[in-house]
Length: 249
Length: 269
Image 1: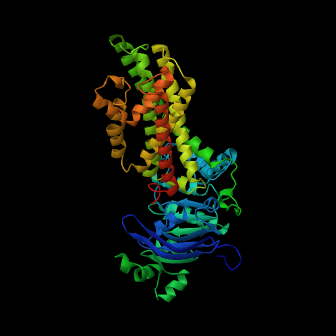
Image 2 (image 1 turned 30 degrees about the vertical axis):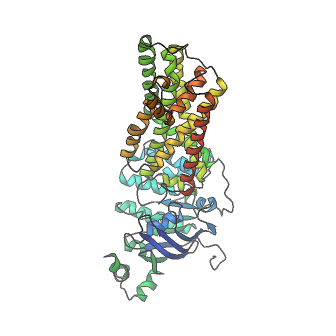
Image 3 (image 1 turned 180 degrees about the horizontal axis):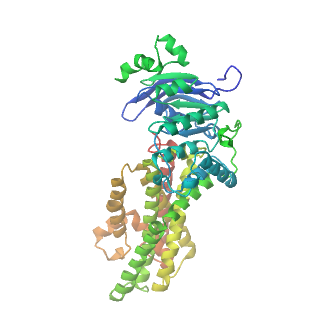
């Protein structure tokens, strides 16, 4: 599928279903298209299927049925994976390596040469204020520093589709502002961003379109203003209560 | 903010690597155990060398009846095999199990690395660690016991097979273990008894008939016999049979390991 300007959509999900071994269906026939260049928010309660969807896009979850395409490539191809950057909700960093090595090797997994991987790693350290910590391992960093490292790592391959799974959960106000600024800068430069968040004002402030996900289905999608108008909601928080909370509770 | 990292890369129609992602992952795997060299290399070498010194040197003078070989020469091949298997097991479990548990395996799975490149990098890293440990053990054991290599070609074929068995066993254990309890249970309930009943310290020809059958059902026994044939020229079973069993086990475990990575079971949700 292509956007109106002929560019392949950043993400096309068709009929995606994931039933886990225990029989729980996290996603059930989900359809979703995200245009290239957008900053797209995915809003839903815990257990709605957000992380499973992200896992299916990034080759971390084995879909039961359906298809996922990233910029026109099947999600399980090298071409698709080369274009995606992922910052997961949890801090999942190789604890055997220094943080400079974490970044360098991550660039290497995406096919960078030695010099380019080292250059980008140093640039990422500088960009996220981690240069002074370059020789430390991740467990030696504070929670905020670890969050910076996970975000820095997601940018090493200069992704065209950046997936941020609750990137501001548990961070202080300053870092949250930095992350917001980072998202806006990346999006202005042409990076498509898929953001999941529990902070409703974050979705409203940053995203040019929001999808509401509940029990493995996309319930609705649109701009913040359009959704509020459609559901006669005064705010996104009000919208969340009306559309998503009944099942969540 | 101004950085190349803030701009998306060009459209990729066909993935091309400046340096193979496989080479990066292999390098990372080797770097991992070199960083913890006291545990990963010195530990297994020291414990094996102590076996050689205590059993092969001190106690050897009280043991006879092994034909042309001293007791020290008799046990060295089995001890080297045991060291290789232990190292392979702990390499696979510490590398793959911990990558699964701490979820940094996701970085590898989400990258352009292909499943067989991931499997090969893990296996080759474990094989290299096994070679390093073997060389270090032999550097001490050969001068201490005077053990030599009677059949070099056979030893190379057997050694490659044993290294593959050890590496793939560790990878499979690292993939299927769901807790640290599993990791250590496999060590104490499988590796240790199989090792001691594998004929490292005694010829199975001296066992009662029933125990001999038990020994021959133990895969470890065949690994030890293959190693012993390579070093000493003969063992309790014909060389061709031990080599055949070693390679059947090596190929079987490799196929099992490949299936885990190809299907993604135990690695992906």
